Length: 278
Ligand SMILES: [Zn+2]
Image (tube, rainbow, N blue to C red; front, side):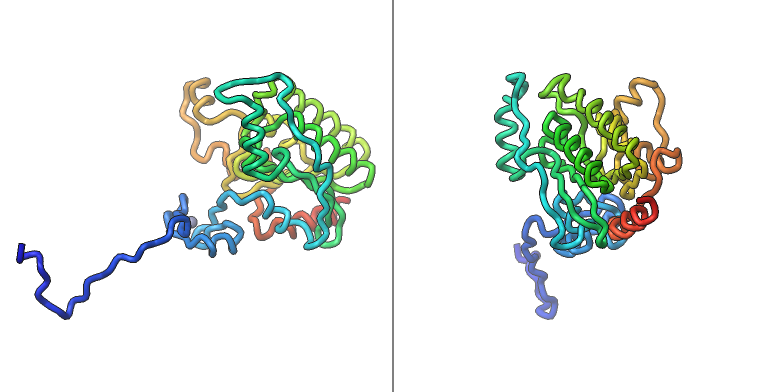
């Protein structure tokens, strides 16, 4: 097979370098290949097209809350398998896995802290804990956060990221919608300021309750926000859906949300609105 050999010695053969896994990420929007450490430094936002990647929930704490001011609240509240539910997997096993994997006790963490010296109560949802689903522990945690915000006369911020109700807890998970909404109504009556930040994705029961009940509703660019998925809606109404359906930009146009704010400006906007309204 002599005809395969390179005779010209001046041409150097390229040696393919091995690229370690997990160092590169392709932007789903502009298709550019992004260097992961650089992407992380840029708040998980594509530097070419500003596509907002999903960001780890703890980073929202660093992004929004003043350094050194945060204090975790109500950290010993946990879900339990009170229905002895066994689906494809035992719910107990699912919970234990989620505790181990996330190091968290449920799909939301509540903190007190400050935003440019303005005291707030903030809840940040964790999509990594059983799809950011809404169960009894989350309902109790948010209720406690609302009561604390009311007592301390502080604004309440909820950063939402959820797949919806946790069906392993049956009707109890759906009751959280009513429980949280009732507390929010009391909070509103007492003059409390409640702001939601909708991130990708905010779906299911969270959209049907506290996600959309904010006095001010902010959303990140391009976030999926909706109750049922597009496939289900398409099947139900038997029509094609408009382009960009259920994305922040579409919802802003239809008046469902107040403003779309890029991640790097989120803290400033939250501070300004609190300064103005509280
Ligand atoms: Zn991009």
